[in-house]
Image 1 (cartoon, rainbow, N blue to C red):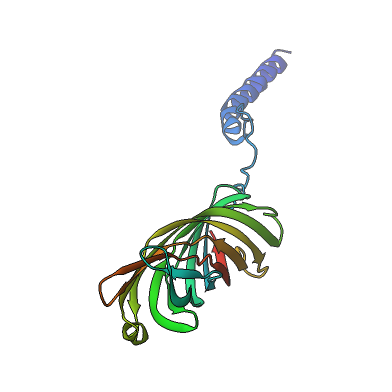
Image 2 (spheres, helix red, strand yellow):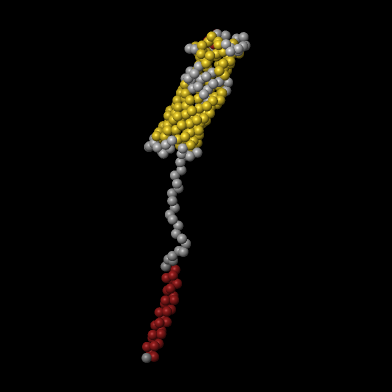
Length: 242
């Protein structure tokens, strides 16, 4: 009886000692549940609409009005109507989108025009006509995106000169004044599906352009008259948004 009790106690002690030795190792190997709240998987960043756009276009500047040349007291000179030729130029414009529907556009280009009295060419002039418009894009998420715009124009003439025909008629020089006007715009962007953010652009503007011209004759007398050109600007090209 005594031997059985000792064996029982000894066996129990050995088992307890073995358990106490193994338990820490098991605790190190057993993962414990974290008490920190689970965080959701990271979401991809939300898509942002492009804020900037750039276009390169071929642009035709088509004057639509003509004016009578008047002498210093308001009498019409017998020279015919004053007008200017159509010019076709490369043009760059920059656009900033406030959001998908509202944007502002600045066009940059320089045009050279032949000046005429009636059908007779009398010289040429260069025009720098930066134009700023504010646009409303009606269908920003469509493949075909029409827009309307209203804005302002400042036209700066430079390098105006007469040709030999005008010099032979008794005129020595001509100049055009800087002018401020308004612009109305209608256009459309057509997305190119195979290239994201690339599109074809068609654009038409009407600008009020009414500088004052001064032509000087061989006696030194100046003759002033208002020039009503009021051109259409018709353009087509490629644009990219970023």
